[in-house]
Length: 53
Image 1 (spheres, rainbow, N blue to C red):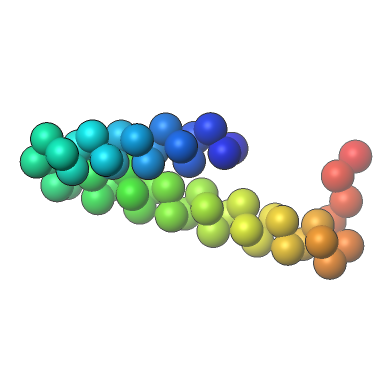
Image 2: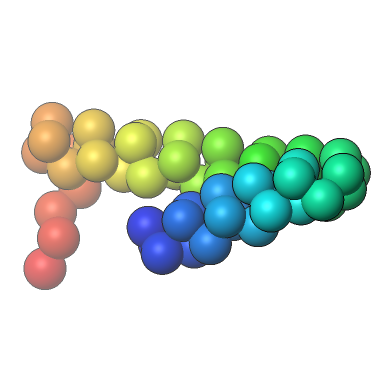
């Protein structure tokens, strides 16, 4: 999951440098969604509501 976030952030940075604003925004939005999902799952694991087996 973290590798997808890093890939999307790199794509957003490269697209931003090349002037492709729409692609950059799309990649950044995807990265934000995945970051939010990872943070929620991390908090659920910390609070003991979800166990990793």
